Image (cartoon, rainbow, N blue to C red; front, side):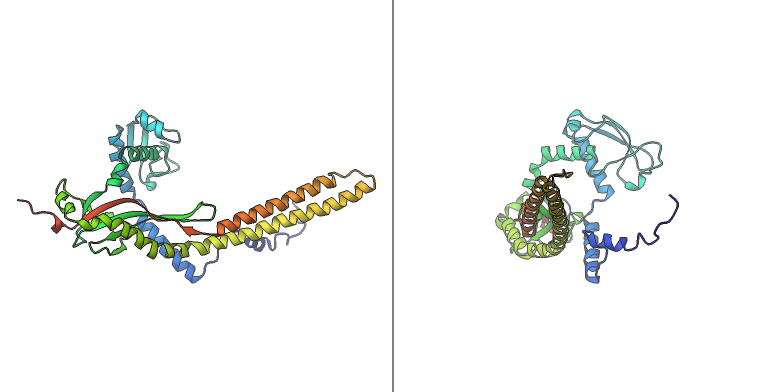
Length: 335
C-alpha cells in the first residue's frame, strides 16, 4: 500500500480533465468585461434583505400569520395559518423560534437553529404563492406611482424576455423594464426603476389617467420596441455561450458512444470466432451486435436533439405588469 509504483501516474491528468470538461476556466479579456457587466447588472437586480423582509411581513400579516421581531436581526413566527402550510411544496412548521432575512445572521455553529427566510424557503415561497393567488389580478390592473426623476407621465412596463431552443425548452430568461412616454417613445428603465418611485395618493391620479389617451396603445408600442431593439441583442448574447456548450457536448457524446460501439463490435467479432470454434463466449455475438445497434440509434437521437437545441430563437415578450409613473407636478393641486 505504501510503495510508489509509478510517481508519474498522475501526469497529464489535469490536462485530460480540462480536455473533457464541458466548461473552461480560461476567459478572454472580452469575456471578463461581459462577466463584470453581467455581475453588476445582477447586483442591481438582486433582492436586498430589507426588501424581502418588508414584502414577506406585509404578505404574511395579510394572510393571518404572526411574526415578532427579536434581538440581533432575528424574528419569531408564532403562528403559520393552515392555508399557508397547505400551499407549500415543502414541509412548513406551525411556528418558528428563530428566523432571519439576512444571510449574515445565519451561523453554522449557532445552537439555536435559525431559518433564512428567502426565495427557496418553503414558508417564504408558500406566502408568495398565496399572495399572488389572492392579489395577482392587481398586476393586470396596474398602479400609479410618483417619481421626482420624471418631468412628464410615463408608462412603466415589466416584461419577461426569453430565449428558447428548437425543443421549446427555455435557454435563458430575464425580467426587464421599459418606459413609454406620451409620444410613444420607448427607452430602457434600468434594472430597478421602482426604487425611485412612491405610491401615488389614493384617488388623486384618477383624473390624470383619464386625460392620457396615449395609454391605450402604449403597451403595444413597448412590445414592438422590445422585439426590435432588445430581443436580438439578448439572443446574440445568449446564443454563443449556449452553442459552445452544445458543440462541446456533441464532441464528447459522439466520441464516447462511438468508442463504446467500436468496442462492442470488436467484442462481437471475437465472440463470433469463439462460437464458430464451438466455444462459449461470456456474451453472445448476437447480443453484442444488438447493443452496438442500440448505441447507433442512441447516438443518432442524441445528435438530432442537439441539432434542435442549437436552433435558438426569442419568444414574444410578455408584459406582466404596468404602472403609470407621474411626476409630483402632474397631480392636481390641493385646495
